[in-house]
Image 1: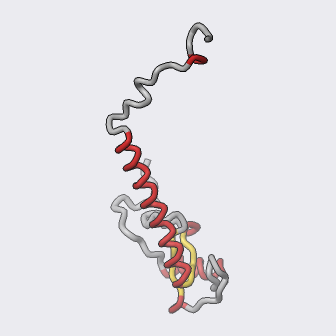
Image 2 (image 1 turned 135 degrees about the vertical axis):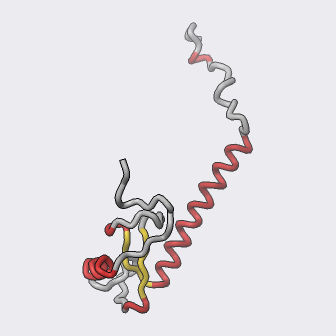
Length: 113
């Protein structure tokens, strides 16, 4: 089944003018993070989940430029840490054999001792 709200090409999608107006009205022209009153020139639209292909209207919020920079940086750091953790896991056990050849512990023995 195809999700009509996903973008298979993973391109960044900007909200339409009517969607931007709806987001602006929903937040009353205030930053989602710091509640600062914004003008159209000092605001930006941010994907809450960090996925640029997820353009559902409730995933997009109005933020000031400073908060947008900060939130985007947090998401980048999380992504880097996740990749680093996966890389370290592969380096420790490149073939994935640690869980296969473990010797049974005493309590796992069929004799119970």
